[in-house]
Every structure is written in structure tokens, then in C-alpha cells.
Image (cartoon, rainbow, N blue to C red):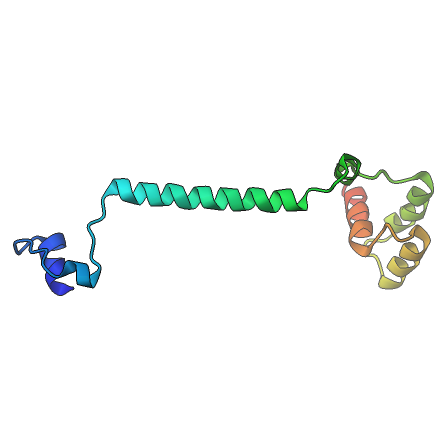
Length: 120
């Protein structure tokens, strides 16, 4: 390899190509490099498209409902307004609020609502 380095890279010795096939040494041209890079990109793109196709729901209705943001109902708003009195919400208040709100609410969503309103 040192000999090939001196011949091709440094060019301090005349180039002798004998025995390079056995070492699997090939000259790389920019065209070949660009083509391999393009093929890799295309393979990744195709893989992403197939993954997206697998994840698409069967009904278009499901797709639309998942993108919509659910509005806070009036009775939920009344329950959540109690949290605005606190500078930092205690955990037992979180638990009470979550029980009153139901399954659609979790701690992260309650905190997000509270944080948005407290900073308003």
C-alpha cells in the first residue's frame, strides 16, 4: 500500500499498475463517486416512501381527525381555571384535575394549558 501511495498520491515514483487487482485497488473518478452517492440517496428516498405508505391509515377520515386540534370544552375550561391560582401546581391538584377531566387529558396536556395561560 505504501508503494501505491507513493505512486498515485505523492507521485514521487512512476506509476506501476501491476498487482493492483489482487489488492482490489481501483482508481476512483469523480463521476463514479457522484453516481454512487446519487444511488444511495435514491435508495434512502425509496425506503422512506415505502415506510410512509405502510403508516398511512386506510380511511381518510382518520387522517383528518388526527391532524385537527381538539378544542377545550366549556366545562373543562372551568375545571382548568382553578389551576391558574397556583404559581406551581402541586401533584395532588394535578391528580384531582385529571380525574375530573377524563381520559383525553394527561399531565403533559394539563401543564401545557396551564403554562400557556399563566404566561398570557
